[in-house]
Structures are given as structure tokens and as C-alpha cells.
Image 1 (spheres, rainbow, N blue to C red):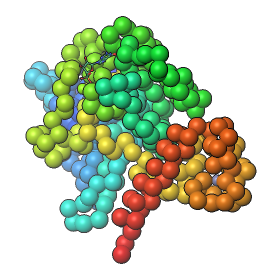
Image 2: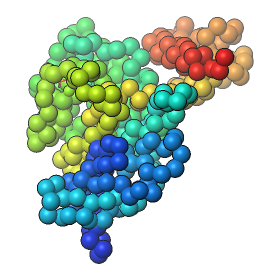
Image 3: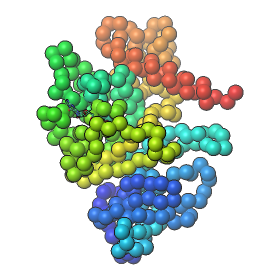
Image 4: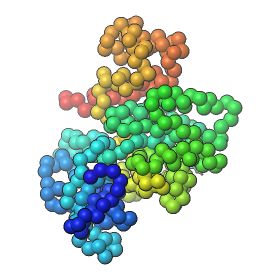
Length: 326
Ligand SMILES: Nc1nc2c(ncn2[C@@H]2O[C@H](COP(=O)(O)OP(=O)(O)O)[C@@H](O)[C@H]2O)c(=O)[nH]1
Ligand SMILES: [Mg+2]
Ligand SMILES: [Zn+2]
């Protein structure tokens, strides 16, 4: 069960892609239709830890219950192995914490920032790229609203991320710049769009695929939709056979289980300078004779990149302290 082709099987069922899931039920895209499917009982069994037997992005095999119902209905029989998964730590009602899978089979995360209104958030892209590496998915950086650029704006800074192996796009919904590039990047892949409210995520998706008709200029309702909102991910089809996840509260795209001591390995641009650190375990913070701090001082590494690293390091340490058994 792989790829994005949906096949009907002889048994009257089919294979498809889960585009949204809730407790015990999900919607499956297959053969150009969306099937409302319950889960076969045994899929719901198992340890309490498995709260997420089926999530958006799962490839499933289902049998048909009523093909002429509106929507057509079925039962999920099998869930394909997850190539990748995005998860977070969730509080368990009985105490303690448990991994909660938010989405499966993601190919890439698209981190959207705008040049203005709102201004780029320091460290946001750096953090997203660490999480992408952690989850084993690709990273795409989109700088939107470049039509608002003035002579004082240094757009070259963004190409720094290209050297780290991501696709970097400068886009404008106003003048159309970069939209073909974005279309090409989304085609045939499952992507997750992340970025602050107002950066233009909905506008970009509408521009890429007018059929989507997403509302623009609305702040996602953070309180009125019940406690599952932040965990519910929905996939939308985009032209060219791709799928895009729109998840207003996707705070789970966060490198939550990276150990502070491992973080430096997620900054490949530090590697050469780190060879000169006196200590092999150097965190590039307070240690003497640090090659990375030296490289920052000489301008070989950008200050903002080191600052993003230090902020994330502090975050991971705080989180570990909070979770430590007392
Ligand atoms: N100047 C300019 N404004 C944009 C651009 N893209 C979006 N906007 C505006 O930014 C605001 C927020 O857009 P929206 O798509 O709702 O952002 P979202 O919250 O990330 O989904 C709206 O007023 C859009 O018209 C752009 O490329 N250039
Ligand atoms: Mg929006
Ligand atoms: Zn160092």
C-alpha cells in the first residue's frame, strides 16, 4: 500500500488515503470519492498507548458497506506501515505522558514566514528544520509577501537555508512570484504547512489551487472547537496529485524528543567549526575554546543561527527538567 494511486480490489473494497480521522472513524479518499469508514474492532484494541490507530496520511485497505450512501461507507480492515510519522507528547488522563501520532506518511514540511505583517519570527525556521530532520521528512522554506520588500530588506539571508539542503522559495500572492515553484514542490507529495497566523498560508494555497476556496484573513478559532481541534489534521488535495495538511494548531511539529546534547548534530552547518572545539561534548555555549563561538565571532557563521540554536537548546533543557521524575 504505497504511492498515491487508489485501486479498487475485486472484493469490492479498495485502498485509499485517510484525509481526516477521529475516534473510531475516518474519511478515506479513494477512486475520486470520500468514504466514511469505521475501524474494524481489532484495530482499536491494544494498549491504551495506541490512541491513534488511524491518522491523516495513513494508507488503508477498506471493505465497502454501502457504496450508494451519501457519503459512501466502509470499514477499515488494515492500516499500511507508516513511512514517517509526526507525533508529540500528550498528557495522559491517568498521569504521565504518551506519544500521540498526529499524521502519517508526511513527505515534507513547508515553513511559511512573511516578510512583513507579521515579521519573520526569529528561530522559527531553524526549529522547524530540526523537527523535519528528527521526523525524517524534507524541509521547504517559503518567504511570502515579498511584494512588500523595500531596499532595506536583505532577502539573501533566506538562501542560507538552501545550503542546508532545503528548497527555499520567495513568494507573493499579490504579484504571483514563486507560485509555480510552490506548485511544483507540492505536486505528488504529502505536505504539512506550518506558520504563524497571517503569514498567508490560506492565500498561498488558494493561489496554488483556486478550487480549495479557503478563507483568507481569518484567525483560526482556538477556543470554540473542543479539545480535539489541535490534534485533528486534515488533508486537502492540491492540483498535481499532492495533498496538503492544514492544521491550525500543529504545535506538535516540534523536535520534542531530541536530547539537548544531540541538538548540535541537527545543525550541520556547525560541523566544520565544531571540529575545532576543545571538548568533543561541547554545547557551544559556555565552554572554553569553542570552535563554533569562534566562527560566530569571525563572521564565518551567522549570529542569528547560533542564537536560534541556543534558544532551542534552552527549550529542550527546560522540557527535560519539567518531565524529570522528582
Ligand atoms: N501583500 C501581500 N499580502 C498577502 C500576501 N499573502 C497573503 N496576504 C494577506 O495577508 C493576510 C493573511 O492571509 P491568510 O492567507 O489568511 O494567512 P494565514 O493566516 O497564514 O492563512 C490577508 O490579508 C492576505 O490578503 C502576499 O503575498 N502579499
Ligand atoms: Mg489561514
Ligand atoms: Zn563548541
